[in-house]
Image 1 (spheres, helix red, strand yellow):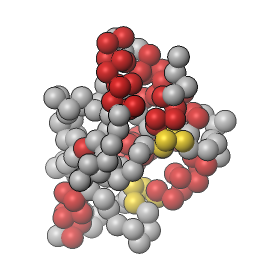
Image 2 (cartoon, rainbow, N blue to C red):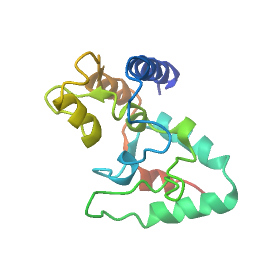
Image 3 (cartoon, rainbow, N blue to C red):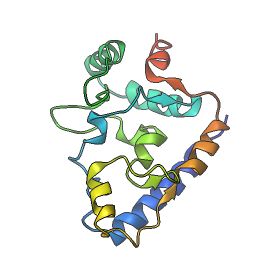
Amino acid sequence: MTTLAPLHRAIDDRVARIRQSQTEWPCAKGCDRCCRSLADLPRLTPSEWTLLKSGLEALPPATQSTLRERVRTMTRGTAGYVCPLLDTDLGICPVYAQRPVACRTYGYYVERDKGLYCETIQARVDGGDLDDVIWGNQAAVEGQLKADGEALPLPVWFDTLG
């Protein structure tokens, strides 16, 4: 199993560079659009799960119970899945520091010829506002994650909890 620290550092560095050059970047505390419209069930590698699990275990037992129930009952809505970890009242992630790589890269990394998936950012790209952004390479990140082992859907990982 690989460690996520170097990958997280590289992602965080890329995100910081983009945010420094783009002071109006929409991805910030309070924006939870991507968390409310997941295209599919979140999938995590073993290392991602280990990190996320450590964040979950630090939460109060009542919160852990609520999150378990949300994961257990996840269903696809018209806009996709709502992340079961999202605090929908506050629009924040209670395990933000331990979030999976897909959450860390969303809005800052692209896959060649697949475009962006955040409509707000895509509109700015289409308008030419972000021509100077040097996007991260999502395919390279995915390649690094594959070395960590099979990515399993979040509900499968939650089933391993006691």
